[in-house]
Image (cartoon, rainbow, N blue to C red):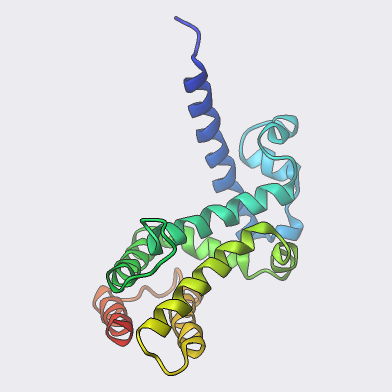
Length: 197
């Protein structure tokens, strides 16, 4: 068997890093970020505590990576061409894709929302660079609402965000006891599209 190449090592490292982040997301959501230790994370990820530090400098760095991954996923959906400008077609695409992602990756989004709503997490992230995702999203949406002639673009940003994020929170509270019917979810999705395009 020939030795692994640098590319193979990088691929293995990337896969392992994602596995650690997935484990962290679950533990942070289910046990609470403040209650979860690096030892517990390493144990659940089936690696040594020392090896954990080869992937992440600290529990805080791991948290930031987990949150950044989710926010990056959202930005990829809303700005697929990375030009910072939101078109009507892109907004429709974003709404369709975010609801599709909520349906197909329901557990992931429930865990993600559970983590970002924790007071210790919100406090920790307040001054971190990853907040630029929120600023970028808000800026694009405000500009879109201005161009579309909405009377109060900021109010529309709040309303739009509340509908999307609020649905996620509703989903989080209902899961796993109640599952929203597909038809109702599609109607809600279409209502948002009709309001903003």
